[in-house]
Length: 208
Image (cartoon, rainbow, N blue to C red; front, side, top):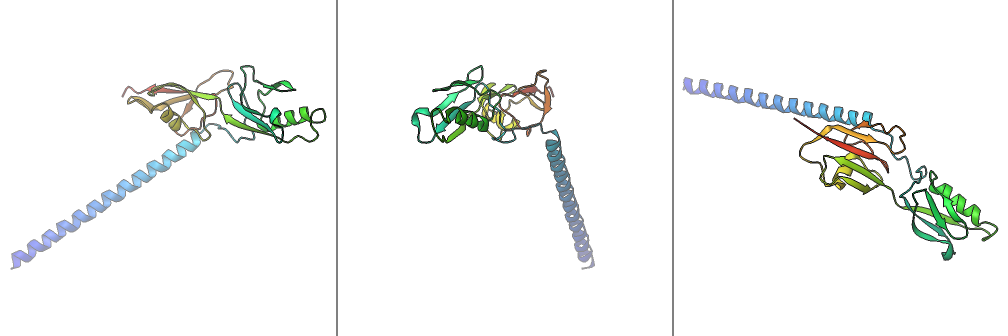
């Protein structure tokens, strides 16, 4: 009887110790995972490069597609007009309009001023962006090439459009050349780095 009691106590002690050990390991794993997640988030925020701020500040360039609507004047409205390589758009009565570097608000003002007085008394003009010029992704993705830009695009989302990362893609060797950078200098990027229209992404190969 005494031996049975001692064995029970001993077994209970082992089970208690094992339970405490499992709990400790789980807590340690959770803490490590949380710390890693926080560090990864902080790194993503710190490494983020300037992205498209808003449609109101977006500057048009060759390849963008816009629609110009003049309310009540179908003959003066134009659907899905693509900017030429020179950054211009053909427009009735006003000829070629220079759109390169302008925002949609500035295009609205240009068309409104051009139509006011001579053609219309009080024109109401609306300009919208139908399609953005493409971005480019090269390297260790399944389908490298040019893809239409989408608002909110990141390196990770861009890679998804390109068929996903290849098996040997390196997440620590990602770089971007920003459109408009006269030096075309690659900037280090992360998978959550925002992408702008016209940017070029490079995904290098991992050798380990």
